[in-house]
Amino acid sequence: MAGFLQNTFNGLVSGAFYALLALGLAVIFGMLRVVNFAHGTFYMLGAFGAYVLLAEAGLPFWYALFLVPLALGLAGMVLERTLIHRLTNLDPLYNFLLTFGLALILQDLVKWRYGIQSTPYSTPESLNGTVDFGLFTFPGYRVFVFAFAILTCVAVWWVLARTRIGMVVRAATERPALTSALGINVGRWITPVFGFGVALAALAGVLAAPMRAVNPLMGADLIIVVFAVVVIGGLGSIFGSVAAGFGIGLVQAWGEAYASNWPIVAQIAVFVVMAAVLLWRPAGLFGREEASA
Amino acid sequence: MRFGMKLRMKWVVGVAGLAVALYLPFGLYPAVAVDMLCWALFAVAIDLLLGYTGLLSFGHAAFWGTSAYVTGLIAINAGVPFPVAVLGGAVGAAILAVPVGYLAVKRTGIYFAMVTLAFAQMVYYVANEWRSVTRGENGLQGVPRTLFGLDLSDEFFFYYAALPIVLIGLFLAWRIVHSPFGRVLVAIRDNPARARALGYSVQRYKLVVFVLSAFLAGLGGGLFAMAHEFVALDVLHWTTSGKAVIIVVLGGIGTLWGGVLGAGLIVRLEDWLGFAGFEQVGLVTGTIFVLAVLLFRRGIWGTLAALRPVSRPSSPDPQTIDTSRRPSGTMVG
Image (tube, rainbow over all chains, first blue to last red; front, side, top):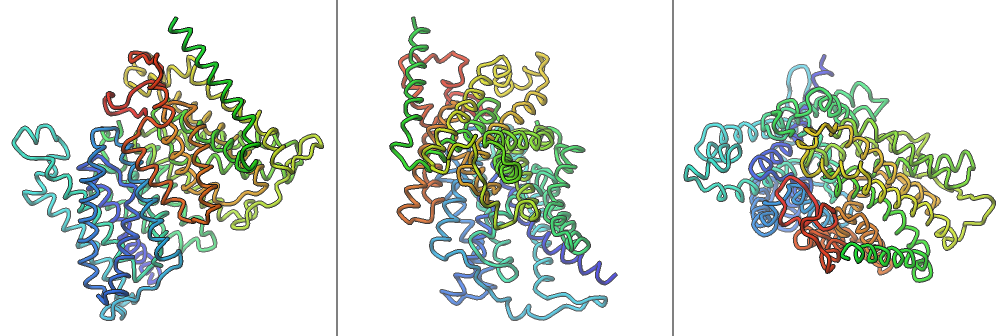
């Protein structure tokens, strides 16, 4: 029982990363109809940002947690204004291709500067201990990651569902023409929303730095799993993307624990789930049919 | 008269292309020339889906790579003439494409790209773990290329042995595009609802072209395994799919032959970068790609075709469709 709970908690922690990344993808997709291929690259840049702040400016984790998403979010806004914006009236596939090219460029730039070796990044001291849950204990940092991710997801949901800004963004997402007709400047929100989505990816990267190997390729394969996650959840649904993120984290952790002789089970579980969802509900578990066209 | 001129132009381009293909190993390292052939076939296979059916497959490395492994295994274990092994590999790729395509065509647009990418990654993970067959990171080594006792160890001669296979593959793609079947594909790309209303089973057509495209990509992948006498896991990685997509966009989406030009350019460029000792290939190809997507969406072939004096704006011929005037929803450069 204790073992099961421990595996479950591990799954929720890795699911937290999927959820944060899927949330950013879904927020951007909702507003811009763009699937950001460079999302995994921004996650990697987030982790590198934390590393660089510590190594070159001596700023610890807590500063990075705030500064790195802010900086990369601003960079994302610049990117939206200068490049992505130019392609918004074309087939969304062009922006998918554009962000793929950007991902290649950014990844190779980091590789060029820092090499492909993994860089260690130590856990902040205040979170070095363990948390005792009675049946089992858990590293404090992982508890923090889980709690922080949940808090972020709830905060995003609250902003979208309960505030005036969220109302405008939701309206602009669902009926852009009608929203404009009501006198709301829809275009004004596109750039900040893109920046915010990028900031979420960067935040996931900062959170990952102390737990995972920091290297230029850390986001490259991860983003493909996140793509599968949003296909499962339904990219048009914020809740679906987050729920699928945590769900896939759980499935992978259970696969790793109970099929440890067969590591392939945990690796391909997400794709098998995706295949099943495509058969059963092609629009995604929480997606609407119209999104599948 | 206009029709006659168009026809003559096609012959000139065709003969010139063949002449370049025959001359290539004299002007370049033969090994680089062979790579160009393989990637050209790969790019044309992707363009068949992207340019003529409106489906961006970002997971074609699954078929290219599967064929490379199957070809390598057949050649190592059966000792058959190399074209037979390549054919076996391509058939293997086509068989894999049936379930993948069946699931992927349930979605369109950006989702299709993500789903194909995800399934290809699954194939990559399986190959990585299935070491008894794929030899994991060591790869399949010593893939023999035999052809009725001919000595093909020299890349120069292998080029001419591989060229007919590539030409057959290209001819096949051309036949598909210019057949009634190909017309239906274009109709599906431009207006799926209308194609369905006319009684065409959209999903079945998409699945068939997906399998055909996988077969062509498989021919290229099998030859690639033969050319290098070695198969590594890279052939299945998503960066391989990405490189093929870059080639297609640079050459010109929906032009078929643009992929051949793009393959020549990208393979040459990468070879040159490698020779110059610059390792950040993605930085260079990525920059060229981003510029192409931003400023040059017709690609090289598309731009050249638009320069022809006999361009007909109302023609259904996909070579001359201008993206900038098209409504969103379809993707043709």
